[in-house]
Image 1 (cartoon, rainbow, N blue to C red):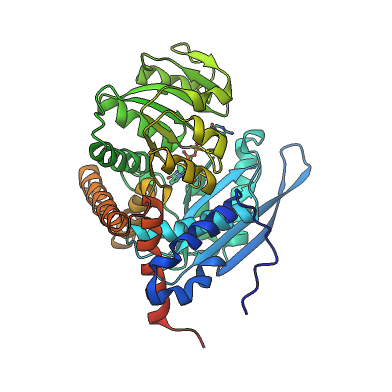
Image 2: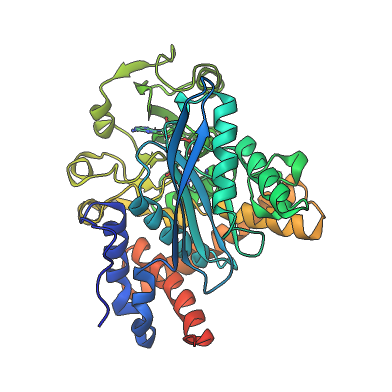
Length: 424
Ligand code: NAD
């Protein structure tokens, strides 16, 4: 009876196609709840908005904006906003769906949502960026709100953009609503520890996985794709634990140094120049050669679909930590499993960011703010507890950590679905 969606055309390796295949793989483990599974295969709500702004030279430019609420069975929507020229409705749908899974996997009282604008923000002035952000916020204002759907930073968005979103929403509704977005500056109700929380979660889950593999972090060699918010914070923590960052790649280039980078130097270089390209403490390398680098741990922390079948055959790491959302296509997942490479999937590995976003939202509501130590302690406890439950599920059914995470999460979402019942 249920026909496939008419407005997207997923392929096996596209983000929505990848997500659909991940859901199909979990069906045998859902028991009687499997009858509700179609609910996960379509977003609850998808809003497409036109974002026209006046450019600094007086021209008017139009941008395509999206906000997708994938599932709201367990609470308000929660998920970031991405500014990137490759953003599409299909990509935002997949990212929103992965947020539903992630939020349920760590048992946060949220559904899943995501937003994006199809734009290269590097081509905009600061004023143009602000006007675009404010107009986009107004356009999606009809479906977001502290109790409805709470955006946060993602690729190319940051605390300043969250501050503009919070201000715009507050101006439109007539009172200051700090809880409408997370990842805000700390002065405006942001949480300590939020900026590095996703990287911290990658480190905490990675440390647990390394322990199970008997892989010593002291001296372990790491390759990191994407040296932004997630990749750089994770790399810093691994370096503090004694690991060597031997390769990095971002949109400005690929660099390698078998002895490991000096973390303070590379962080300063990225801050000053906008990327890893041109870093003096390493050699430049062809982009595709990144996937052949000799390393123990690989952290994809850039965009979806980066670990293809071909690259999966060449990866030298024993452990892949998915800092990015959807970096591994299903065919590559199978190849990595056959080769005995352990993958800690995005839907648990990078859940540290949304977990501290949840802390931020709770702090905003109670107007009572925690110390960074309290936040990190609670974050570590939630991540370790969630990973243990997932690992137990994987061992019990002899399935991958990805399918186990989907099993834990889908069961929670579909149980809520069943208990709420079908309206009307
Ligand atoms: P960011 O904008 O801070 O950094 C993105 C990084 O990816 C940059 O280093 C950029 O140069 C690099 N990049 C872009 N295009 C690339 C390409 N073609 N090849 C190689 N590198 C490329 O974004 P971020 O917040 O660090 O997000 C990175 C990933 O982590 C995304 O998949 C995002 O959805 C995911 N994520 C982010 C958060 C968060 O809290 N920010 C939380 C969970 C997951």
